[in-house]
Amino acid sequence: MLGPETFAVTDCVIAIDDELFSRQVLARTLERVGHPRLLQGDSAIAGRELLQRCPAPRLLILDHDMPGETGLELLKAIRCGTTSAARDLPVMILSGIDDEQVVRAAIALDVDAFVAKPLMAEGLRSRLPMVLAPNRDVKPQAAYAALVTPAPGPRMPLPPCRGAIEVKLEELRVFQTLGADIHSAAGTLVATQGTIVSSRLLSVLHDIHAAGMKLSPVYLQPPRLAPSLAPPSRTGQPARMMRPGS
Image (cartoon, rainbow, N blue to C red; front, side):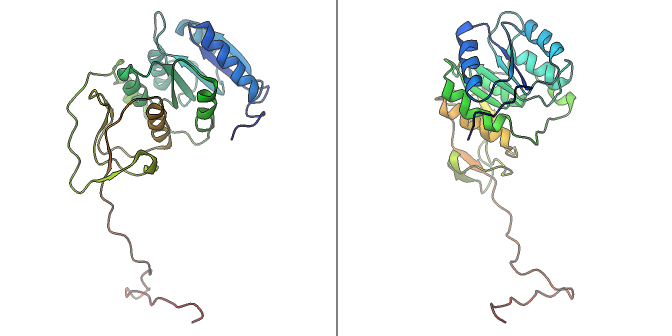
């Protein structure tokens, strides 16, 4: 739950959006959860300049559809380490949820949250706890450099793997392995079969589902055989289960 001191006055937040209304919503929302130093720009070029002024912001909020360099292109540059910002900088992308290629590419670039436009204050606030959480992982630079933005078009999804188990999205958990591709109703690939679910991916899947994109059923790879409840003894024989009081 976000309190009034989510951000400290020493924190820096950068918001890049060419729409004045969205920047105003961002400013009002951030005021309610603290008073960070808010730097605003209307283009990716401005974003790069602001990252020079504040190379270690607590959060970067990026609109995707801007004149010139897009938000995704700037996100890719950050993940590739070609800007002054840390590669694991928390990044939130703002975009129309109907642009499924943007969603696909943002997930591949390890975006931390995906917020659909028109921007609403509550939608933004609900994503902040996950975005600001510690323990963040990024892939090697070469993995991001090989990605093309925007992502390739729709493809035929792979069938679920043998023995895959269907679960509801709300039942999906971190460290589980997808047993089938997750794709949109239009066929756009969102997450691939064999992907190990991270907290970042789980959060973004919930973001895009809540914003109205219909996703295919979620399948998990079959679990391995459960280990014995009783650990083996030092002689290699199963240990005897002890009853309470014995």
